[in-house]
Image 1 (spheres, helix red, strand yellow):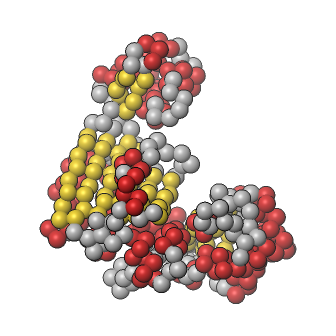
Image 2 (image 1 turned 180 degrees about the vertical axis):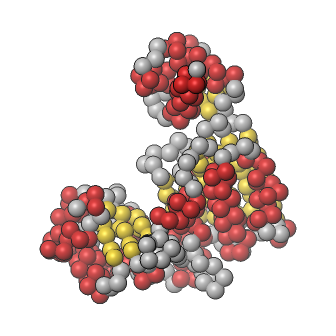
Length: 358
């Protein structure tokens, strides 16, 4: 009986995880995955409907199942009335999240308090709103303030030529406009702890997803009009059953010699804007700016189709030669990028590739 119950739970978890993804025929998808009949799948669907984990739209052939929100909560505050982000967490947010595993609650506590602290101490706004919705599968949160906007502020405070350059700096980590009081790691680690993380401010966005695809469009939550409105909107999404911990995420970005934040993974695609290609030394220098803060740098080339000779030379020959104490590697590079790395680095090229690329 124990094995049967375990199998049933696995099947229903599969349904919850895939019901939001195309194709919409969850019955066929589940039947194929577990070798069940359609009648067998329907029994599990009926159980999820009784448990109010799913809703059903339409009838017979047009029937479609969707995740049913079991929590829909929102609150708006004057920033001047908030005593502290920890108070807001324990008084308002923690009770709304309900009975989640301890590791999941730890992730939510870290993410919420870090993002709310940014609104309190950096936004220069008047108000902040929080929206939480939860299904049997995942929990989503929106935190939006009416301040200056994170990218505009970073551009002004860091002397960047373009708001979009702030996107790249956030991707590196350890970026802050107040280094005396803040380490600049909050956004970096929050973005890595959650399944999906998006910041939208002005006409610039920053996003990190543990998977390539995500079930909901953050703009549906944030509102497309927010794209040109003042302030900062942060959208975060986490499955209710994730198994990783905050410590495991922190440990991913430390080295054996130092358990601090000494290792970073930089999405290289953040250095290119619009249709432009990564071809110049200036682009490479912008990508590598402030890398002295780390001991290990992984350049993630996912989504980058090609790089130019000057760009590659500046990164994989000049920077490597002039910063011998920084271990720099490339990962997720396609064949065209790999060929250019090998062209400029010569015999040292394999030493600059992460294990999977070597």
